[in-house]
Image 1 (cartoon, rainbow, N blue to C red):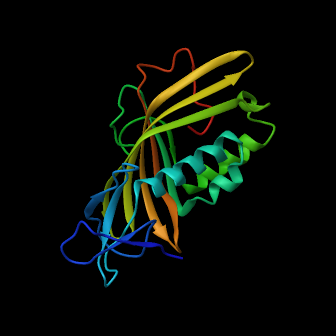
Image 2: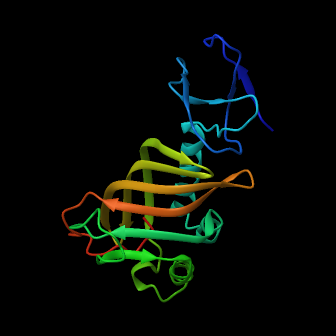
Length: 207
């Protein structure tokens, strides 16, 4: 169901859509003075995508909750069938996984294999599971092309296990798609703002 609001600021009548709709382009339209949310114009022929930052944030918060609660099989449902997950090396954060050594460079087959291993008994670094808490901030919609939405966000992941606390900080770069009325993750890149993986030593969780 769609909810629309009239836009008194416009000389011509328009519609503001909360959420997201099928379309091809994103146009900044108005800023809510009460919530500071950016809205995007929906033309009367519904030829343009309308999405709010709040909708994106809610999606990312839900993903973070699934990972913190170790509901990894539910997390897989957020991915497209051809999804990929990358964690570049700390010395080449903007590198290309095709020509640069990455900490993690998973296609969909390897992502599912990683989840199966993490939920099993043979991932010794995560058996028993560590406790994690993810904080997401500065969520920004970068661009929209067709059904593809590019999003960036900052993150801090706190991991505790065996009386040791590890902190991973950095930024996410997402390529989302809107399909069947839902967001899906096509590409997920976690870029660490660390000089090295000391004292963490490794990345044994899904960041």
